[in-house]
Image (cartoon, rainbow, N blue to C red; front, side, top):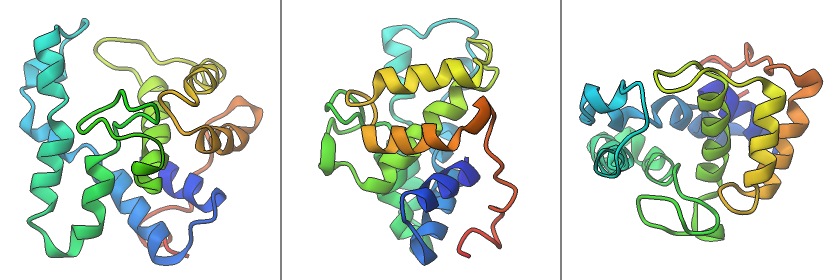
Length: 173
């Protein structure tokens, strides 16, 4: 997801060290899932309310892990807030709109895109046109509409965007 995050960040005007930070945050955004039991992570059906409450802890666990690494301090708020919704209905804090760090709003859109276009134990992969529709429908409630519109614009020809230029060495260029 780091490549998607960097591609979208660049389209939104992020450059230099901030682009590299966004790339790194995209790679590390779900590190907190190592603290979630496999039975929940790999469950082939919908999570119960209780299981979802456990799953919702992964940004907190990620924050706690990354906050111990001095060189990753700038990544912490992005990982911590990548499941916030612009309408305040997300987690872990329920913050909304501009209170969500801008680069966390970028991560949220590409995380949603990546999750929906991937095969998961609980759902088949959706096509790019289907996911574009989901993102557009969620713009203004779950996702920042400006970020969604920029991402949809990058999805030319309803294909996955080319992120080959965004390896760890090239992210900041």
